[in-house]
Image (cartoon, rainbow, N blue to C red; front, side, top):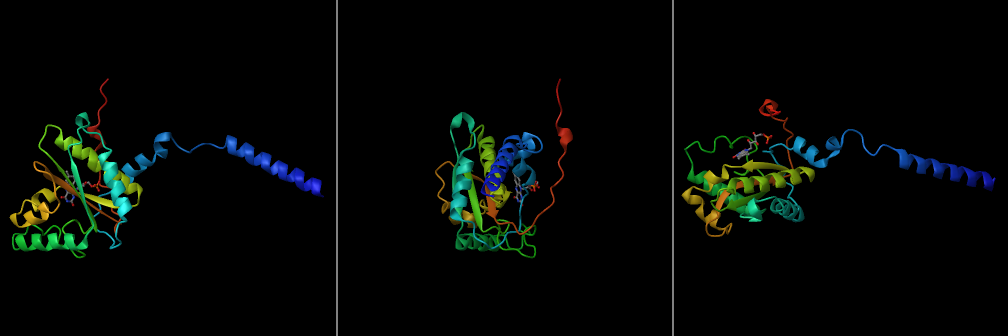
Length: 214
Ligand SMILES: Cc1cc2nc3c(=O)[nH]c(=O)nc-3n(C[C@H](O)[C@H](O)[C@H](O)COP(=O)(O)O)c2cc1C
């Protein structure tokens, strides 16, 4: 009986080894398997977030992924500030709403469920850069790294170009200064970050913009 069990165990082990060696490594093409491609395809701009705070290690990781982006001549002319203080976010929101009261400037944000001017996110990453020929390209790469890394971590993001206008309001200067950007650095955008409370459909893209040149 013992011998039969031993033979059976050996057979099972051998079959398992053969299966492990011969099983297909992946289904679909390498590109379809890539988590980066998957993140690119599933990323959406998120404008509704859960109140769940984002773990600080994750926010730090996102910022570091941003700084790992390419930049012209690797000059890394950017500065990144992470804010997860509800007090700071709510304070900036209150100041802005008061400053623009009656102008209609914030109407597009003031929908049911409104929490703050950063598309209701519990955390915000601000990015500044000096004027420069490739400034936009550099900080654009940084933003996309953060947004894709966030997608991979099940976090939502929204690129907020509107931060430039919001922090240009005179009433917002003390909030802007509290971010502590260096002299000569201009706020370019903010990235809303948080756990998504919506799952928007992908917005259409025009693939005819791509042409092959033979
Ligand atoms: C430079 C830039 C500025 C943007 N500014 C804002 C903004 O101020 N507020 C906002 O809600 N979304 C903003 N967005 C997000 C776009 O509206 C969004 O990316 C676009 O509609 C496509 O949707 P998707 O990101 O879900 O694919 C901005 C995106 C970029 C690249």
